Amino acid sequence: MRHVTIAAAAYPLDWLDDWAAYEAKVRAWVEQAARDGADLLVFPEYGAMELASLGGAEVAADLEAALMEVVRHRPAMEALFAGLAQAHELYILAPSGPVIEGGKRLNRASFFGPGGPIGSQDKAIMTRFEREDWDVAGGAGLTLFDTALGKIGVVICYDSEFPLLSRALAEAGAEILLVPSATDTVAGYSRVRVGAMARALENQCVTVQAPTCGPAEWCPAIDENRGAAALYGPPDRGWPETGVIAQGAMDEPGWVIGTVDLDLVALSRADGGVLPFAHWPEQAERVVRVAIAGEKPRNA
Image (cartoon, rainbow, N blue to C red):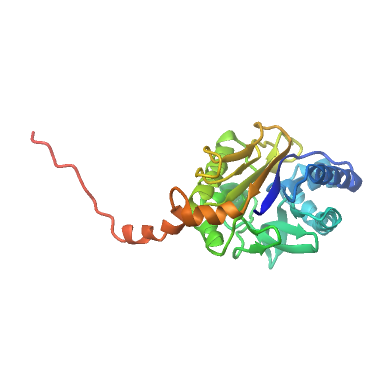
């Protein structure tokens, strides 16, 4: 059995007076999860935006200035998470946030392990806010992280609503899909939750949703945050009947922790009650032609 204990953060965005306050907050969160026995920690999408507060109220309140302030602190943030992963000998998906690369703004989540930085994943498909108001662009591709825990992919928030992204990662071998999210309405949270659960069902794998939660009125980019952290699996034999492995309360900050046996992923894909992962290719021959069946006109 390959047991992995995963901690998903429902993470509040706090006003920070200085870097020391941020470091103390992050260190406390990581140390709590480590004490609870977590092997893998998942922080949310745009969790890095709380760093905008380090520029002061005027900077944090301006969309453009806030983004650039977070970019400025990105190297220090990554060094902090790299050091914590090494010190506690665990894996961390750090909070995603903006980077500027090749003249483009990207939404990037970096992944760290006991040996240091492993890689990163850029969000692939942008929401309307990111496209129209923030000028954040989609990343160029997907990354599979092959770790001692297992094979891990990342689909950031809106990406979880597009099945082919997760399918590509699953076909490459992903057993766990991490879904960091930031949503400002219950509807938005629900879309990502439904997406995460559907991706677990069709790929017969584990998905992990880690949202931002609570208000942050000082920064219009992340002023409202709704969600609950959770771990999902396929609702099949060996897994919870509902597909919910662990789930926190709505808008309640803290870690949600669950332990999964990744051997069940291979078992489900090979001999589950149903075999959606194996039967996926059968869709192609069914959608080559769509017949139109219209109702016959009624006699006057």
